[in-house]
Length: 395
Ligand code: SF4
Image 1 (cartoon, rainbow, N blue to C red):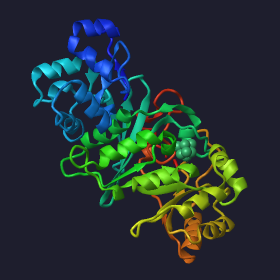
Image 2 (image 1 turned 180 degrees about the vertical axis):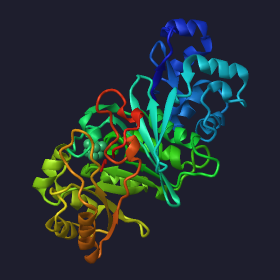
Image 3 (image 1 turned 90 degrees about the vertical axis):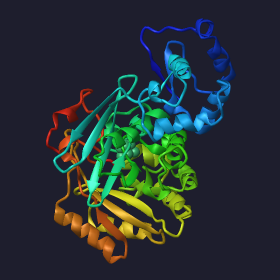
């Protein structure tokens, strides 16, 4: 759980306890909960269900109130504690003195001509993160971020150039999902969610797990099926078993067919796991009967898009139940990689298909709002995306 600062409201622990006597015992009783520092508010959306239950017990409130508050947060998407209208006014006031809902104050929505919507959310510390709503026929996919920037440094990815600023907190990831729901038209609903925005989700595992719980919980959460959720990784092989335990889909960003090529394209990721050990972990990944792995492969002209690359890819993926998504590189300013021609992309796909691999070419969406894969980032420290510059990747 994270805090938001409340300017002008300074309350040391003791002073706070003196003025709001009832809350002292709460804070003291909650030493292992992520409570706010003096001068800050605790974000309720950052509580897991057990944390919320403990919080409620410490307030000596009725037990049912934990789920009641979580429902307000997740299902009714309220932005202010005062909106929890079935809580007694006195309790709402008391709660407001030490806590906030935890939604971001500012959300800017950028619309692409192809219908893609990019949400820019300003965090409590002023940093900006992005979530993207991508329509595709009957599907509407939400792509969410798990870090500000990324700890990895894949050469073809704009986000990687930012470096890792920090991991996102639970309320900041959930806020992206709730904010996306807020901007939907009445006849729209999100069909799929991918953890494929800024950052490496498996580097922020606890937050990822808590987010999946909030997404899938039926009594108070969003009630999603786990089948609709995909976690994408650049290859943190040692953590794949933890993704398997979540019951969600796994996408692995491969992008290379030799150790050397992967070291060159994804230096940090290949240091964490060699191509060989990553694929070994993929082979061990427990798939249910309706599941298969997804391998993402960014096609870079003249680098990894040759027939020999395609043939090696076929060999590497032998005996893994999977599909392959080919992502023609989305160029961005300052990148020395190029997008292969449509013909070269089709040629690469046909080698894979002829070998019996289900292979799809991912459409580039949102090119005019920097919302396409690998373009989630801020090159200048400003917000180039606000200009809706017409150009057009992550893994
Ligand atoms: S491709 Fe993915 S893992 Fe690599 S730098 Fe970009 S966001 Fe991070």
